[in-house]
Length: 195
Image (cartoon, rainbow, N blue to C red; front, side, top):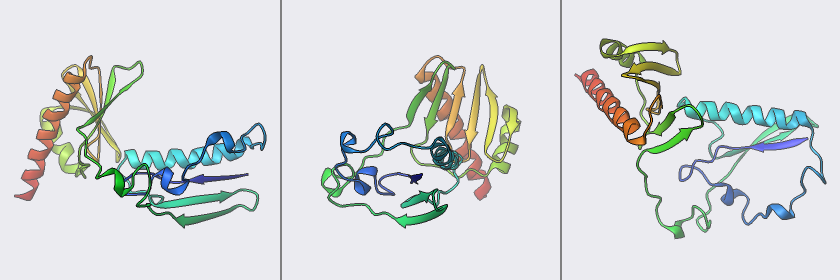
């Protein structure tokens, strides 16, 4: 009747190894020996889903650098600060600085869709972006979280932080071309807003 939730985003936050070093799952009590109530997994899973949605939508997470301890027997929730360990084998100082990677591409199963994460998250002004997009593209959906537009034969879901889901592409090269073209367009829109 208990669970823990946190958002791990090194190097901004500690990693799981910082908080629970050298844990071997084989030595932990599992569902078969300790038991778990389905409602517990449901509640904790819902909190995890909410934190994931917030991250994807560019909404700051309060659980970065904190551990939410849920005790459902007493119905108590506590937030505990967690810290990065300099000697951590996973993210500590001894492994050297973390290197920023190029855009991360992830195929989403069965949908001819690629998720492209920006190197550096943006904070798009959706009103200005939407106004300029409509001049050049067919905008299909607009919500506070996402703008969906048609780009040639592809459909692009644009999130406020610059992340894009590009559907209807057969290759990663094509997805990256679309991503770079739109990123250049957004940089141009931002330059207009500074004038």
